[in-house]
Image (cartoon, rainbow, N blue to C red):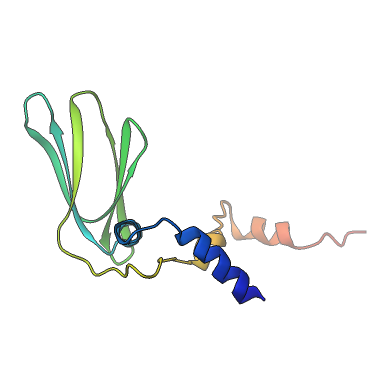
Length: 138
């Protein structure tokens, strides 16, 4: 029963999608997972000069007049850059090399560690022990 519901929902979601839409979506997911080399270039539309160029495993998020670029710089190392956009400052993002994507399947990335939060504790160990130990003074 569950499989038939999933198949029906999948068929409804895929209605009207073409290969280019699916490939584009899967490429975007791969880039957001730091699997695709990109070049992000900022340029002045009036002078035509390049102002800044970033290359690497980068994810790009456009928030209207501000662009957030997050790049993976090591195994567990990342850098995030915020750049303002204006009437004369624009950008383009180039994929550096071809990437194989499947146009017959949507890609879904499930990361349980994104659901379970990391908890940062500020204080000393005695404060932590006192916080979780019941008070038996009664």
